[in-house]
Length: 387
Image: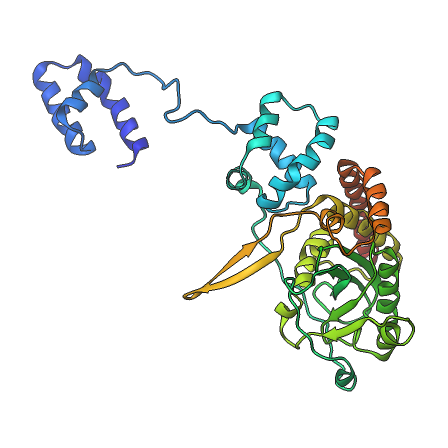
């Protein structure tokens, strides 16, 4: 019998028990002990007690209440729903900006300062998203040029300086890859995690090449290596010439093994955090949306590169059938670049000056406004096509 059922049963017989004579009390008591499986002495004490509502909930007093959970949730959303270990590291950077715009009690501030990642997970559990969708693959290989671009594997532990990037594209094609639609190019620096995105029309070699050129101009470091999958948007002679022929120091242009997504893991994970979390899996088939998408990417990349920590894998150890992974302390890409001895002082100074002008809360609010405008435009276009 459940606790709720026992309470209802007790409520029904208590008054009768207290008003009954000795013989009838014995009958009620025997039945109560048999049904609820209470000891006789405890059952007598319960039946003779007054009916009253419990004033205090049993157990320890709740430390992280609804007020605290609302502030933690707001910060989590502002940080882009990152994992608790990253959020713990990012909290000291974000809190001054958050406190400047939001009234937070002193007790909540103390709790936010001292909360552990595990407790963050427990408090945020009701708010976390449950389902993830997988997109369609639009990668097509070019067999003829493969011999000119070698297969080369490298991990984050092998890279000791910024400038070695991985690249991939994401198709905003919805449920069909037919016709024309927007795509997004993602480039991630293996050493620091610095990530840039550009929206382009189709995955043709010319739009992708122009997007790569645009990203390279905005990178805070020189590019030394470029790794990609085996799609024709990357494996073409135009991009090969751009990296090998038209510069004094050629870029090490390599490709990963086909059908091995883990080879390009650094950029593959950014396809979710930097593209799908923003735009989802809808189909964008209006070329006029590209400027607004790139404005959104500008704010999104700035927010992530300067204020969202990332973790790097240090080691993997197999223990029986399991693989135990060890990560370093979370840091933002900006912090990793500032601490890198290979980066020039002039490049660091440019980054520091830019960092001083940024406010993560304002970036997030501006990003949300841009996203709202973007999806309202997409919705209007859908209604026009249906009409």
